[in-house]
Image 1 (spheres, rainbow, N blue to C red):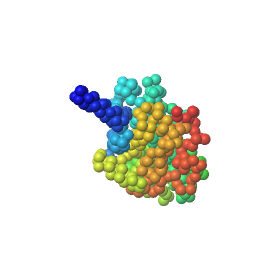
Image 2 (tube, rainbow, N blue to C red):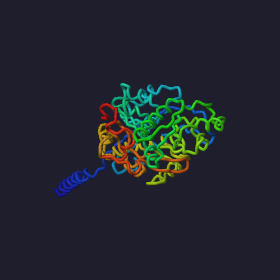
Image 3 (tube, rainbow, N blue to C red):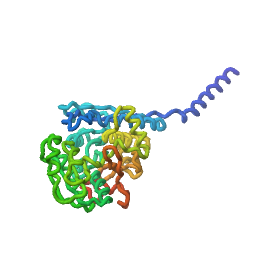
Image 4 (cartoon, rainbow, N blue to C red):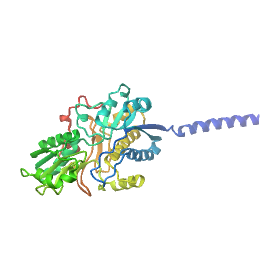
Length: 396
């Protein structure tokens, strides 16, 4: 009898211990896999031997963010992973998406030109996804060609132009001479400059198209001084996104004037001279790991992955709908090493962020410039504000 009682008591104690331990059992770890889709690029004709062509802009930034996400995920029982897909130069981007990504990943970083972004976003297989564009600055993608399943990380051309215009207005350099290259991207950049000029009361005293020899080194002495003669102006504004001629305008103009735009003083999301607000630690971490400076696309990829991580850890979920809702909410705030918290504009999917105004070896200013006010956030003084948007229906 005694032995029987002992067995019963032992069993009861075992059950009691199991019930007591159950609430403290480690929760199941959530896994969130992110796809990174890009295509090989043809190295452009080099204007200078000083800048080496970087073929992998973007992915190293995403990889660094994955590590940061996993540091936070240790406390929320979440893990993050990045799977990279690189399409050959002559490959079919949509085919790779359909075959390797569509059914396996809900969150996708796209490092692609504007026209290929739309091909992916409009595919029948892509409607249950959220795409984060880390490469394009096209204003049309934030306006009449916006897509409800796409967010944009890079600053738009309008944001860049507005940042320059704010600084020029503060300096009272309001007479602009605009030089435009022949590439379609140069025309789009020039359109953004014209919009900013009108918005901030600048005067375009002259506009010329650069149509000289491709090799600017052979024409600089003869062509640039003659080309830049004309009405008096305060600054020479360059629209040369391919870097064909813009670097050769500085110090060679007829009148002694600063150069701004795509060369000279540039408006950028990230720059090697940026060291404030913890940026120096980010610069050092990236350079130590990759052996080069962090580029804009690296920074944008970093922000895209960190945004996903921030949303996922806040909602404690890997569900796409929950993550997207939080990303577009007023509660979302992402630290981007630029002083202000970053957030998404729900009307066009653009990431709000300060713009760095930088020369080659010096950070000159950070926009929005002090004194430019907005009823909600000064960051919305850069680019298309909600009353100006042409994005029908916004991002849902």
